[in-house]
Structures are given as C-alpha cells and as structure tokens.
Image (cartoon, rainbow, N blue to C red; front, side, top):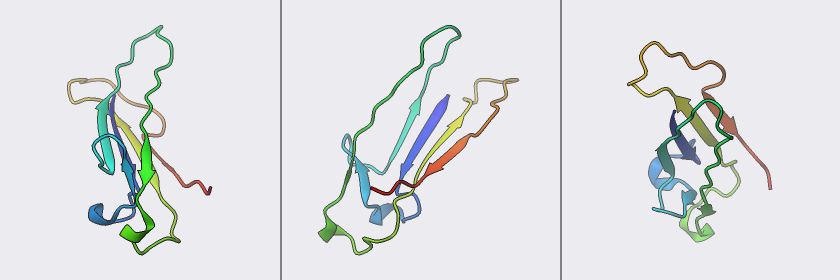
Amino acid sequence: LDAELQLDRLKPKLSRRVLLLQGHQSSWHGELALAPGTPPLCHNLTAYLRDEADFKDKLSPVALSLSLALPGAAPGLVLYGDTLVQAQVRG
C-alpha cells in the first residue's frame, strides 16, 4: 500500500505547527508491504510541536490524516473500506 501521513493538514505547509522528528517535515510518504498470513505491521513515527514562539495560532485543533492507496503497479486490485482517516485529539 502507498501511505501518506499529513500533520496539521488544515494549515498551509509553511505554517504547520507539528513536524516529524526525522527530516523535520509535516508529511510522510511510504510503502507498506502486506502479505497474506503475516502478522500485523507497525510503523512508528515521532512528531513534535514547534515552539509556541514560531506560530500565532495556538487554539485551533491539529488535524492529522492518513491516506492509503494501492500502488499504480497493482492493476485489477481494489481497496475496500476507508482510504482516508482523519483524527482530532485533545490532550
């Protein structure tokens, strides 16, 4: 599966308040390999909130999204279920 994670996706790219620790970017793209009969796959990404002095908007929620798609090299296959997941969590 082709996976894409967007952090603070409702904000313009240059003003996003949450970044990934590795690469200091607000998004991640990756390929998740799945095979029948294999155990579930876990992938951990560490993100951080930028310093409050770096942005003005401290009240609006941070929206995260994860989208999944079949790679272009998978003709004839169909992905069923939710292909875009969004979450807002209050801490």
